[in-house]
Length: 210
Image (cartoon, rainbow, N blue to C red; front, side, top):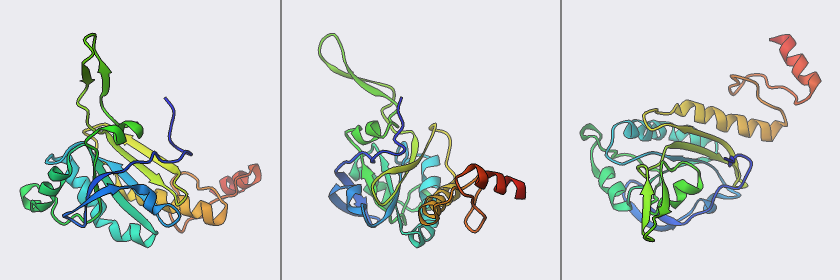
């Protein structure tokens, strides 16, 4: 299995819901190339239990991402109509009303498959019929994409395991710091801490101080 890190993020055009209830055709991450960093994350299904906690957690940090010239985009294998219905449902009833970033509808399952986070697969049986294995939904995949459209970080959690949104913010900080300063970020680095030069001397100097 190969990784997407260091490669161009797979392109797609798909239906999506934006601004909490507006349908849009041919939504694509390519609109952000040269302009924005992107946190693109998959979640398994609408109208479930762990998923809204993650969606709201990203919404709560949206201003922090915006300060970092970063957009947040979600995706699941549900339809755009399903996304819209969930977006109209109040939070106290299990809905995600108040989410404003785009939610992509990967109804063909191809986006999740191309990003390597689809739980099942397609195959043709001996009768020539198209069949599937698994539940054909997305694992909790997260991809940070730079302004050149390249994947710089990815994380994939199994279905029951929610993600840490603060870690996504930290990784955006690390990517941008490295780009701007030409330095590398050691373990547990956070914005404002000392980084180090990517040389043997730089590593030795950093370790001697810590």
